[in-house]
Image 1 (cartoon, rainbow, N blue to C red):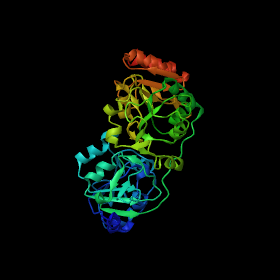
Image 2: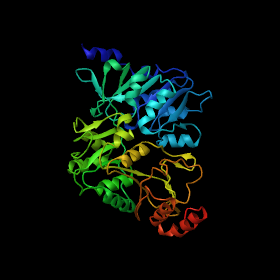
Image 3: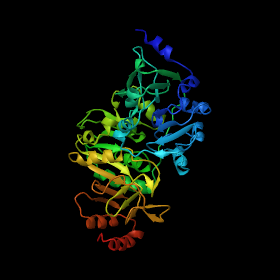
Image 4: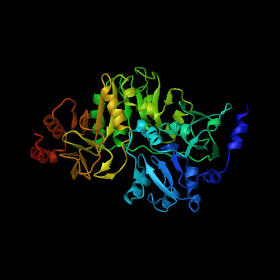
Length: 434
C-alpha cells in the first residue's frame, strides 16, 4: 500500500484541523515538549464559534493566545482548562480561578481520565512517517498512546525537527485521523545551574547511591547537582519518568551504562524527554534509549522490579512526622504530584532500593524552615508519612522507615537549619511528638 497517499489525504492546514473541534468537546493535549505548538497557537481562532471546549493539558510551556479566553466551567466561555501538572501559564490562571487541577499519580493519569469522561479529540506531535507509514511520538508517552487509542478524533502535528525515538513510540498513519505540518523549533527547557547549597545536597545524595544502582531523577537544581556528583560511580542504570539533560554527560562518560539493570538491561528507559537541543540530538535514532507508556514506566510494581532502585525527588515542605508536600503552598496548588509517589513507592519496594526526598533546609532567603512541625494548613500530601523513606538537606540525611514518630522528629530536626532547631524541638513537644 502507498502510505504516502494516505498521509496526503489526511493532511490539512492548522486552521482546518482546529476547525474540527466543536462546542463541548473534551480535548486532551500532549504533554510538555510533545505539545503541538502550531495547533495550540491556532486554537484561539475558533473562540467565536465554540462554547465550553474543555482543554485537558499537562505542563504547558508557552502562553498560548487561547489561554486568554479560558473561563470557568459552567460559564458561557469558549474554553475551560484542566491540568494534571501546572506549568508557568497554568499557575497564573489557577491563581485567578481559571483552571482546575486533576489529582493523579503519573502512571494512571491517562487511564483514570478515560474512565472519568469520554475524550473527543487528542492533539499531539510526531515525526514525519517512514516509508511504511510509521511515525514516532518522539518525546512523550505519559498518556499519549492511550489517548490515540481511545479518542474519537486524533490530530498529530508533524514536525521534522522532532527526534525519532524508540520503545513504544511508533504510531501508524492509519491510526491517525488528521495530520498537519509545522516544522517549528522544539520547545526547550534549559537546565538550572545548581546553587552551592544544592551541590551540598547533591553530594549527600550521591553518597547513598551504590555502584550498579538504577536511578530516577527529576528536574531542577538539586537533580542537576546530583548528576554532577555521580561522575565517579560505575554501572548506573536509568528507569525514570523523565529523561533529562544531566543524564547525557553521564552516559557519554560511561557512568550510566545500564549493564546491571534488572529490567530493560542496556537501555535508558523513560516516559518522556524534556531538555535542550543537546538532549534531543542525543536521543535521535538512539537505540539505547527507549520510551514506554507512563502506565508501565511509573507503575510502582514495575519500578520495584529493578534491584537497587533509587528514586530522587524534591519537596517544598516536610513535617516532623514525615509527611512530604511537593506540590502546593498550603491549599494553593503549585505544580502536581507527577510521578513522585509512583517512583518513591517503587524504589522503597525494590530489593536494596531507597526512596530519597531532597530539599533545601530553608526557603525565602533563609527566613523560613522547610522542615516544619506540621505542614502548612491546607497543604496536599504528596508522600504520606507511612511511605517516607530518606530525607536529605544540606545538613545530612536521615532514614525514617520503621522509625517511631519521636525518632522521626528528632532525626528531622538534626538536619534542619541550625537557626530553627530549638524552635522545632519546642513545637514538637507541644504537639506531643517527643
